Image 1 (cartoon, rainbow over the protein chains, first blue to last red):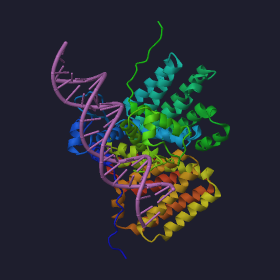
Image 2 (cartoon, rainbow over the protein chains, first blue to last red):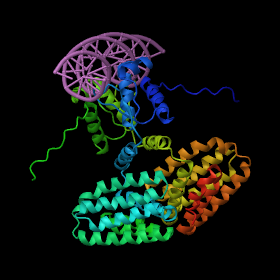
Image 3 (cartoon, rainbow over the protein chains, first blue to last red):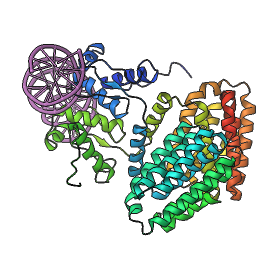
Image 4 (cartoon, chains in turn blue, purple, red, yellow):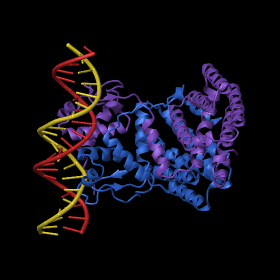
Length: 248
Length: 248
DNA sequence: GTGCATTTGTACGTATGTATA
DNA sequence: CTATACATACGTACAAATGCA
């Protein structure tokens, strides 16, 4: 028994090796955002591969949001600062291919945003509290529904940031934009937007008060309830019990 | 005022248009997993682009986990069933490029897994309960540490499935594997693995009892506590308060 | 099992529009 | 404004790999 256990040698494509090396350089920090990759012709020399191979590798790196190349740019492809764009893309694909229901997405938002509120209540700075306050103020003063939604998003964004967890911040952002993308037209066609906006502001003020008081569990519960009230109408009745399961 | 507001025509690359069309066909379901794309030469005719362009598009689609092409396959690229591999990749990249700390990842796990437990306590079927029971049993009987961890994962997997939320299921899976990848070597080198395994089993039995009793909040709290106990030693002391903020 | 036709992977050359110095 | 270098896109060619008769 035992002996050398040889791994199967999977045929790895040339472009994959190029991707790996560049990816490693970026993720290890030896290539920082703003810096440039060598030109395609230079890369084909350094990796001793053809132009096509270099280009396929660059396409993959671009799809992963790590670099961007523009025609004619004499400096070569640019290393990009991190954006959750790739995460957003793959989660959007996920939502369509895995047939995620609106209920599942809203439920996920309830989990993430309420956790953000819970953490924010304990970890927020006074400056972040002031930002939340300002966002609610701008919601109250919003001229139209679009501006209102934008400030609503801004409020949730500050809360997520105040949670101190970048992953929570990014995921709330991604899932929120997916949900809004799914029902923005229905939201815009809502019958009594004024009443909805008024109620939303009330909810946010309650959450803000709980965050200000440092009452995490309360802030979390209020966040879940507000989100349920806001979205339940757009969720098929049969799936609402799953949402209510989070309201204890 | 008014008049036609012309949008700036962003120069969209040829390969991007190919990607968009194929992506649309897959996500809309008109191309199902297992089906094949036309060959590269056929695609260059249908899209009237060069083969390089077709290939760049295929590389992007492959990077997104939608298709796979093998050399010499006369049937063309295969449309893949959904896997969270792309999500996993972009979140792993995220963890490195955005410099996510282990504390943030563990905190995220605490949020997701406790929510899964909460929902599972209310929505689980009897069959899923039996699966959890069986997983704990196999944990107790595990011959070595690797087998133990595998059954541990299996338990969490059933709980996530029982939550009824595919997004929670996928994200718990992705984040768990990232966390385990970061500290698996440290876990393997732990001094008193027997004691750790015994304690882990106890924790799981408590969670299981709460799920069996339908007590969601208790199951959620026990899950957070178990996870904190399991991972806190590997998190820098300065970041542990952020984790404890979830333990109320 | 063998040979054949086809496909992918890779290399190389060329033309064109573009961005920078 | 001009020149240069670049990315984009097209086309051809050949080796390796695959599926099928």
